[in-house]
Every structure is written in C-alpha cells, then in structure tokens.
Amino acid sequence: YAMLNTLYSHCTRHGHFISSSHLTQSNLQEGSVMANATTSGIFSNILHLLSTLLANPSLSYDSRCLCLRWVSDIISNLQTSSFIFGGKDFETLIKSLIQLGHQKDYNIALTVCQSLQSVFKITSKLSLPVIQSCLKLSVYKLTDNSEKVRNAYFDLLKILPMDITIRNNNLLHLCDDDDQSISIQESAEGVTA
Image (cartoon, rainbow, N blue to C red; front, side, top):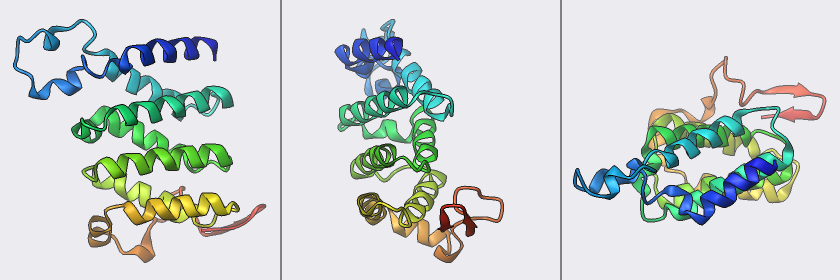
C-alpha cells in the first residue's frame, strides 16, 4: 500500500502525466515538443497498472480503494479529453471497474458506480460491449441490499445510451447462458438477478 500511495502522490503532482501522454497527442503536430516528451507513455502505463491491480482479487482492500480514488481523479482530469475514453487502454480500465462493481462491498460498489457515472456524463462514445457490460452491472445492482447502492445504479442506468443497448439487445435477455455476471439462481444470500 505504501508504495502504491507514493506512486499515486507522485502522479497526482504531475497531473497523472495526462498532458504529455501520447494518448492526448492526436491533435498535436508531429515533431512538436510535447509529442517527443520522455513521459509520453507514462499515462498509458498508469492505466494499465490500475487495470491490472483492480482485476487482482488478492489486492488489499485499502489498495483497492486507493486505486478507485486514483481512477476517479483521472476521470475528473479528462473532462476536456473525452476521446481518450474510447481508447483501448481506458476501455480495459473501464472493464476492470465493471468487474469490480460486482463485489458486495458497499463502498466499492458506490465508488465504481460514481466513476462510471462520471465517464458516461462526459461521453457515451464507448464500445458496445462496454456499454452492455455496464447495463448488466446496473441491472444486477438493482437487487442490492443497500438502497443507496440500488439508487446509484438506477441513476447510472438512466444515463446509459439506451438507444444503443436496446437496439442490439432484448432487455429480457441481458445475459447469455455462460455469463457469470448475472445469474438467476438462489444462493446462500438469497435470490440474485
């Protein structure tokens, strides 16, 4: 945790290296000073690191919460660079967030939802599989024990680009037979959707 917190603090002081990233350089001319910066790949590495850590089930709770705070900070800093959300690096991070959202922990569920809401308030131009996964997670969380979590995911559901998801999916068939994210089974904790 201490090393991760130190890295987070360093990256925060440098704006997560977003401004010098090659991911934000699409509008700059080739050969410009920013395009040749030695830090151009750091932001991409940060996204990869966060994706990997969030997908790791053995990551400590405090480290997971720190990673979620880091993701939230990055999303806030990308308000004017919405095209990055459609990139492969960020899409991988969003997929890790969505998978993490299936956890039962109240704080993690809310933080994931707030991050996803922030992304969809900035842009809806994400890949169809990401939007569909977010839709599945939102529907799944509508059955959560916590009213605050249910309301948060219902609010997320309201801002998803439903025209895309409805056009390509029948809402009654949100999951395939082999999809583990939503299952209609009875478990020790009750019936899940």
